[in-house]
Length: 368
Ligand code: ADP
Ligand code: DP6
Ligand code: CO
Image 1: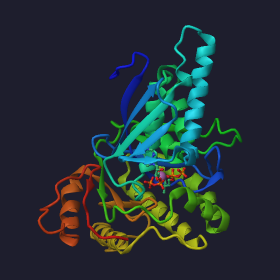
Image 2: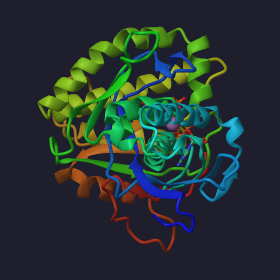
Image 3: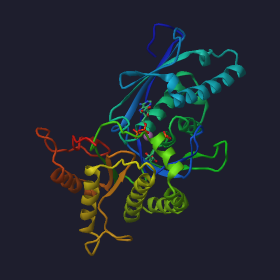
Image 4: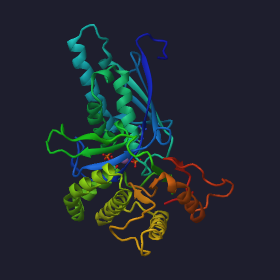
């Protein structure tokens, strides 16, 4: 608490990103943010990629305001934030009605100030960590955080950005699409906690830190409207979810790697099937795919990386942007890092990259 006004309250929270291995892409309800398929992700360590958000509730504030990475945003245009704030205030209002002695925090305006320690809107899930932190922070600032479950907070974060509902949990997290029109069964659930597969690491390779041309929300809506291939994907995802959960339960890296890469490829195929097409991958992304494919082929028996092979060393996945995330077992991280440094040398004077575990290694300065 840092305040000159005894009725003001300020809190700072942070939330990690999550990177999906079965991707969410498509909404069946654009106001409740209900997806057309279930998805599954790994939540990265907060020490690495995170959003840090300070929320201040103060009786002297006249309106809600938001600063993102030091720049003020127009909250009235940010319907997602307005929705999250409205729902949280409604929760607080109910508490205040039940207990008249409670301070009327539901009436106080909020100032929200958030900073991402990695590129924003570049396909590294800033909306996931951003809305997870925003929801968690506001819930604390207006005194509802202790009164609602993590699952309820996750449902509220979903109203900000679909992928954000998964960042309220650590480890391996499924977002089950649900079937109810009101969305109460569209919730994130932890499939396995962070201690389940400690050898699993994420290497984040930043090919470009530029904001993407097509934000995820607009891109997936266009896909829903124009892509027939999406319908086939929607048909396939339930099986993939089941296979992925099994691979995680068995710590079966070969199955995990194969499913992860196939799902990423299918997601980007669906983007290309959108009309007009959406291209999130760039030349660097494609070079990473080829490098990892050739590298895996050295270990998968007959020099090919076909389906059902054993011996995979690295799995790539790309969100809605050109930046790669590689899921790798700890023992193979040094070799993969050496490979990346050899084929994508760091810019002059920056020296060898040594960071990896879920870190945004500054991969290449190239633009899309
Ligand atoms: P990404 O691939 O980074 O998730 P999206 O297109 O899904 O990109 O979302 C980017 C948008 O998410 C930003 O333009 C902003 O509106 C919102 N966002 C990102 N970071 C934050 C944050 N820390 N706090 C609040 N909103 C955020
Ligand atoms: C490719 O959650 O960013 O990263 O719900 O419209 O905010 P909105 O979209 P968003 O979409 C994420 C798409 C993805 C895949 C994933 O994270 O599952
Ligand atoms: Co996003």
